[in-house]
Length: 264
Image 1: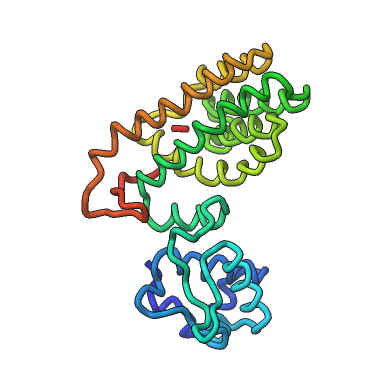
Image 2 (image 1 turned 135 degrees about the vertical axis):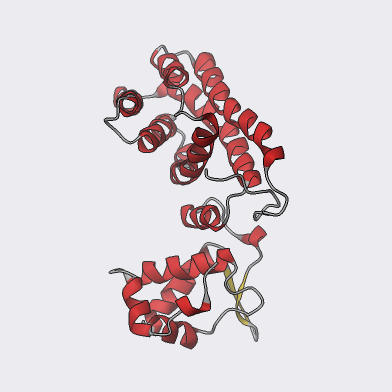
């Protein structure tokens, strides 16, 4: 939770904390504050107050608020000013919103729902990649797998390598809608992989990922679909096994308990 003392007792320090890009810095600061509940029971500050708190110009504040409105976090209403929208209105496909949610408090229900979405998308993306991916796109999937192998030997970052593999499969699908999920998948996978690796005590199975890659290379869409479905299905099974261990006193945004940090 953001403490009131963090919010611009000294505007010059607040401005410095935003970084070089003031608009995006303010966007991140206010967006995170909304999601973690800093404004709960207080109401959202007017433009002049936000400007004063953060030591920025009104134009910077106005642009940040406009961006947060586009993400579904804020709404401007006549005679009510700018108000915070209920969580159901937030754009969960927006990488910033999802990142703020995951930073707020780990929610195993959010993790479950994310992987339910993945199992509806990624197996079909893999099947499409098996029938229509270009040589360059298949090479990118292979490169992701190679990075995972290198990571096992300590020569790459396991999390980044795993994400690179899954993003490459989405890109190779040839479906513009599936491709749009890449940023969301990359963002949420960071928590999902953290969580599953911690529970399993090891990184993602290279053999399971290789089965996806081999099926795509063989132009076997059914095998690619099955391999990816099995890969994500293992994650969902692990989540279901872990959910009862979550403590009732740690309620996340979607009503689930906290399980620690966030396999594939």
